[in-house]
Length: 232
Image 1 (cartoon, rainbow, N blue to C red):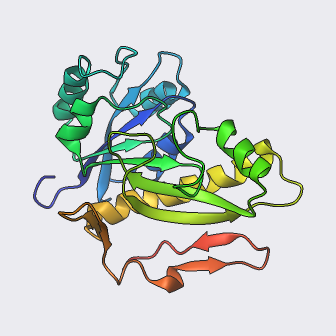
Image 2 (tube, rainbow, N blue to C red):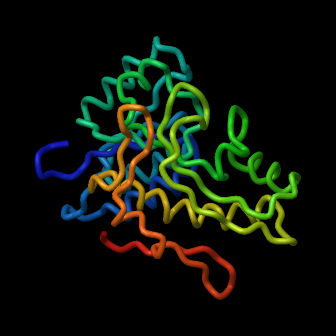
C-alpha cells in the first residue's frame, strides 16, 4: 500500500457479484481508505463482470484451473493492479497454491455460515443454508477469514450471527445471511485498511481493542443482530 494512499483491493467472484457491489458502494470515494482496482471472475457469464463494467473497474477471466500452471497469470493480474488485498466474494474455486503462497495474509474470503461449521469443499450458496436447516442449528451467520490452501480453513477474522427461524427455508435464510454479508465484508476491509486487524507471525488474528469493542454489536427489538459501523 502506498504511503498515505488507499488500500488497493482486487475482488474475485463467480456469480452475480452482490458482495462485489457492496464493496464498490462502500469504497466509492477517493477519500475512502480502500479502492477497488480489479475483478477476477471465474466465468464469462458472471454477473459481477457487468458490475465491473458499470463501475469502470478492469476485470479478467482466467482459465478454469486451480493448479499452479495458472497461478502466474493471476499473480500477474494482481501485480498489474498493484494489489494490496485480495477479497474472495463468492468465488467458488480453490486458489492455486502459488497464489496463496505469494499473497498469504493478504487474501480474505467471506463464507455464509459460522466456520468451522458448515464449511469445506462443496459447501457454498444454497448447499450451506440447506445443511444448516437440516442440522437443526438455531444460529447461523457469516464468517470472514484469511485464506490458506484449503477451503474455508484459514484464520477467522470476524463473524456475525444470524438467528435461524422456525419457518426458514434455504431461500429465506440465504436472503437474511446475504444482507449481513453486505455489511460485514466492507467493515472488515475497512478495518484491514486502517490497520485495526492483522495476522501475526504465528497466524493468529489480532484486533485493536478500540475497534473490536463489544458495544459495536447489538441485538434489535426484532431479534436481528446489528453492527455499528463507527470509527474507532
